[in-house]
Image (tube, rainbow, N blue to C red; front, top):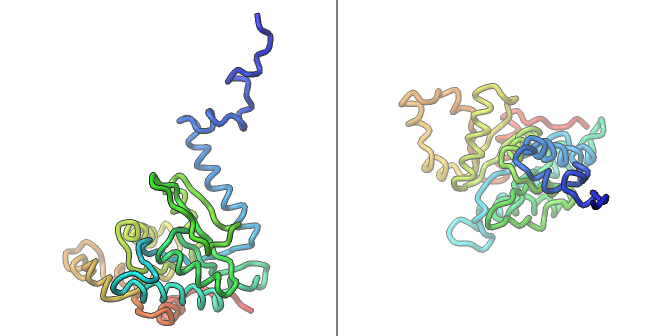
Length: 249
């Protein structure tokens, strides 16, 4: 009989056993790990609040139609919000506020992270593993560039520190993220935050908000949670008027 049992699967330390960690029974533990790892780093950076920017990954700086304008306005917003919101300086009490946070990918997300990068402000990229593999854009702060397997945990991190939500034109993913945050607001499952949609004509064409009211599917009060803007400066104005929390100096 061979007395050496160490190569046996059951003998491995549980924390070092990848087959065990990736098994179905450990899914709850993996959820916890995906919560804890970014949380630890965000606390190390003293990030208390974020400005979440959503929008299409397909928008290009030199793309067709209005894409260059959308990209440049997202980039401009990343700059001005980082300069004015408290991301550059650790505020009283030792915290950074209103740090730009995106999904970490290309397009609008890249533009917003790029604007923060250009004024030497930290910014966050909450990336997701996809079958075709999302590559992080080069403008997120390396220590704040995270990767998730679970959409649910990624969405939780996007929402839990958000002081505001800014949504640029996008497709199904952008719509999903917008309505998830709206639903959290309407149901009282999250504190109220300012929500601004960039490009009024686009959003009023894509979503017939008035029809939703007329058909009794939503209330006028719920739709009033949404503000609209058409320039980066206007986004900031709408956020401040909508109650954006700014650090005291």
